[in-house]
Length: 259
Length: 238
Image (cartoon, helix red, strand yellow):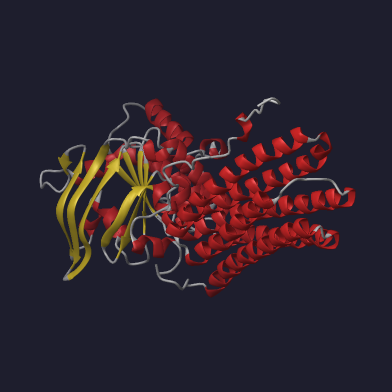
């Protein structure tokens, strides 16, 4: 049974994290480990702080002027809020996929090639092509677009665009991929394809996903963390959270008794 | 836990599911009671009513199954709700089985009464039946209240049924050895006793389900089975 499975060692650790938007506290003293090569789902009602917490992991909150992050967040042992950290490099190690697919207004090829180009990851045209094709394959998109790599990314369907964004994140060879509601704009089939993709991706990457769909969290993740009013109420083995949660607040939320 | 679900029709479905199981339990108790009375009074009319009455139980089970599947498909319950739907579904299967066993008892009563077969004393069998009826009533209360302590008590009571079954087995062997003409009737009584012993096991299994529904954990110790009839041999000269 999965409860007996030893948890993988954490690749990210968060300790006593507080996040403020101006005077309003959005995250209150949250500590959580993100196990390597697993999928961790962050769930909770709207406004509970789950997306805010996710954005702490690659310092996306830096882009919000009034946002302050306190506490200790480490990636592979290193404090990511250390002033010496190169944030652009950090984000190439910890990629992100957003709710709404947001391909650049460029060709499919250039969307994926964009990251490797700005990070100078390829030493030749062939190498770059190789990276683009491998990334598209890993994102499960290559077979559908191999004959039209020069067409605009925006010409793809919603589900394909989202996989293009995943390919774009993978192209810079990250270790962690943060996903913020990646399927909320997709139909059930496109969602299933992304979920299947996530499952195969966890061999190579660590995934943290914020989702409003508890069924999705139950389906795809190994670890689930439940947030409510900025606090981490409970985290643990996904199977245990959805069959026998310890805390009453978790019980009430997942069984539809608080919104 | 907060009692009210945001979607009130979900609560209605869950209440209806629980009511269906309780109704099944009440039908099972009255079927067993009637089957036992038919045996004691050699009442073939009553036995036939029991046989016909099993249809109602099958109907209730199929209604409960449909509702449980609907809840799983449309509501996708989690945690306590999930455990309750699955536990109730499994318990309904146990009640349905108990109904079959009661019906079988009534069929045997019909047969031996018609043939006027000798059976020896059936007091132990009646005692077994009474205990299982009490266990069934208690398990319904335990389900209604989600009371794991009461469920645990019911699990323990099954031991008594097993012990009585063992002693009835020995008793019937002696009747059969006394006079081979008793064999036919005694065999039927023995099968009826086995039916009741199985019914006790079914109630104990429902008790286990209730403990899981309530606590989220399966009881640690597996239940002590006291049915030893599979190992009893009586020598003709003993």
